[in-house]
Length: 265
Image (cartoon, rainbow, N blue to C red; front, side):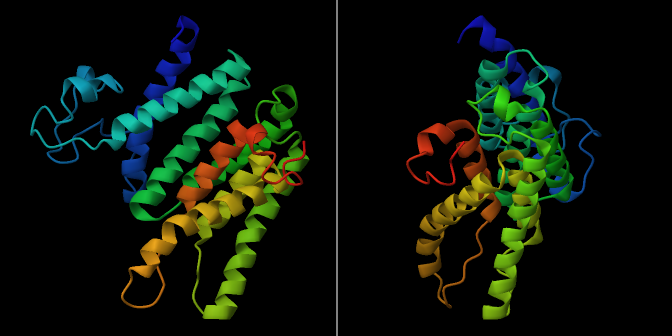
């Protein structure tokens, strides 16, 4: 890794460490500021030199120094993934103000993926500010200035994307309710789709929805078949939407052949 990439990598790892706090505490409605980082097993405060992102997990052998309880492998994974995405953003934007909204989108998406995977909720405290940041990114014309990102090119496109993205999930919820008299998706999915649409525009938001549904079906159908009663199995759909968002924003050019009409620039 070049010296030029070390700064965003280090920043991304540090923010990734904070994301682990967000992922653990927000669903529990705990403060993400106080108290400081603690072992979830014994509540012992984590010392500064044991709180170094990625590396601390290695020299602690994946265990708490105080109680020797295992540290979840998720912690270094979140830090590493966030750090690598920050490097990818930095390589496109450099040390400019445009780095900030795209990096914020990455971190918000990673947090939503893991929270939904853990407890099947998509907190408003992340999705609603994320939608606002998406509109700001559109107003900054990041999609025009950095075409390597598949992002909106105006605030109007962002607002339309948010409305269409949210409306698509509302429509699905309504149709499924009329058909089965149960709510097939949550309102958190509605707000997450608004965030996705704000960043990508309505065409790519629809593609993200289709991509998420496709991957969700691949994962969910085998699990549903294993159910003893019926074919119902609750999937954390936000996980697949988050993966779809990151895939489209960073690898959109590689996906043109999949849906050329939706991916027109």
